[in-house]
Each structure stands twice: as C-alpha cells, then as structure tokens.
Image (cartoon, rainbow, N blue to C red):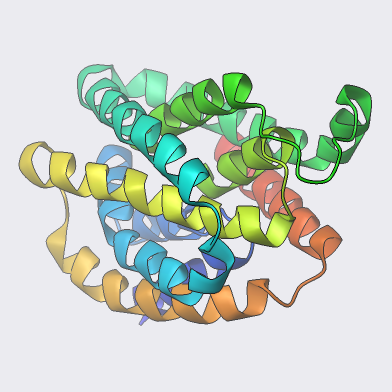
Length: 244
C-alpha cells in the first residue's frame, strides 16, 4: 500500500512540477532496497507515469515538432551515457553527487526569471537558443540516465531558459523528454541492473494514473505556482538526500 500511494503521488507530481521520482526513491529505500537497486528500480517504474503525462498533454505538444525531434535525439544519447556511468562508477560517487545536483537544479529554477531578464526578453515568436538548448538537454539526460530523481526539475529549468514558449507547453515537453530518457533506462537497466520487478509491478500502474491526472492539473496552474512547486519540492528532497 505504501508503494502504491508513493507511485500515484509521484506520477502526479512529475506531471505538475517534476521531481516526483524523488518521492519514490526514498520510499524504496524505506522498504529495504539498497541505494543502487532503489535507483534503477525507480527509473524503470517511472516509465508508465511519463507515458500517462504525455498522453494527458497531447494538446500542449502540438506545434513543437522541430523542438521535439532535436531535443529527443540528444536525450537518447545523453541518457545512454548516464546509464553507462551509473553501472561503471563507484557507488560513493553516486551518493556524493546526487544531492548537489538536485539542489543546483532547484536553485536554477528559482532564479530563472531573473536570468531571463538578464539575458533579455525575446520578441514573440523568436527562435529557441538552440546552441545552448541542445547541449543543456544532453547534460540533463546524462543526469537522468545516472539518477532519475529531479530530472523534471532540471529539464523544465533548462527549457524555460533556452526555449521561447509558455511554461505550460514547455512543461509538456519536459514530460516527453522524461519519457524518452526513461525509455532508454528501461532497456539498459532491464538487461544490466538489479531491478526489483515486484516493486516495479506495484509502482508502474499507479504512476501511470498519477501522470495522466497530474497533466490535467498542470495545464490549469498559473506559471508562478508551477515554477515554485518545482523549486520547493526540489529543495526539500535535495536537503533530505544531503542530510540522511
């Protein structure tokens, strides 16, 4: 029951703000999984939630074809690199790096309006900053393949700074890119990592339902509420991972 509830809430939070997988990761630790197994199990279990999010956000993804194709291509490569790093680097590196990355992503999201003012407000319909967007999505996807938690926070912060669109539409793209990254991790981890398939069977259906319902909520939230939901959740979990 504990994991079922965690999956439902995580799916909804991923759709609304990003970072819902950070709720499942400590839940898996709480039921006795070691950190590496909890991480790979979490990554695999999140896939249905991202699929539900994309299904619920079909309207917001329309008109983003070029952006979707470019960012998805680099996300596939980046997530594959991240998976390889996770399976080859020592576990101590994982424990040390993850809290810092989560807190940094949350801080970036918090100050993104100020950064946008500093770099200048584009004219309506201005092109995306592709030279920055694609490398940033690649690095975010490396992180996503390495540790799935807070990937949505990092992606939506990156997109809000580099792609010129409403946050609701960029949040929908974040969900699609999260699905791309999760698809790569499912393939790699299914073949090469110690996934707890019983936990996946419990979590996957509820993350799917939560992701679909959360997408409906996200499109109705004001942009400031959406952004600060990401920030608060990211800081809370980053601090938790740092002090635990």
